Length: 223
Image (cartoon, one colour):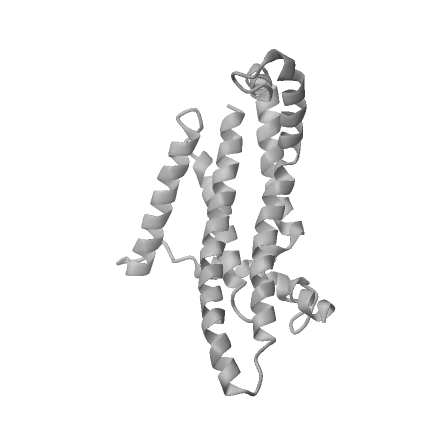
């Protein structure tokens, strides 16, 4: 039972073992074309959403960053959000539930911010190790705590994303396994299943947004 339950998060599991990882390419097909003679409502919605997110990323980063910096974070957000949403479709592997993908996104970004901060703004990075107002006798202890906190950031970023994706899918799998030939039982399970799918859709968007915001906050510490 447990092997069958967790096999939905294995990209080599049936029914489509060779092409399960290709689900990561599906979001590319959903991007609206940019060269329209006349823009439709979907392309306008997409443009307005990206513009709003871009303004928020610029606000969080501040004026010290180059103008193109928020675009990197927007690309990460859009990629995660669409992959999370695609995972709600039948027989589509949720790539973001795999730690290999989530840590491959978190580790390079974190390492880039960390190296940039220590090379370009060494004194500023040292000041972050001791929060403002820390008593002298706690300074050495706070340095250890802040150092560990900085080192585990890529792990917390990736595990948070993967764990939230896995948890909801596990519950949906458990509920769907309870469906039987009894129509009454099926009707009783249908409502919580639909509510759970709605909740998972919201989680897919929220987790992508949280990932982007945390990366933005980590980047501001290095400037």
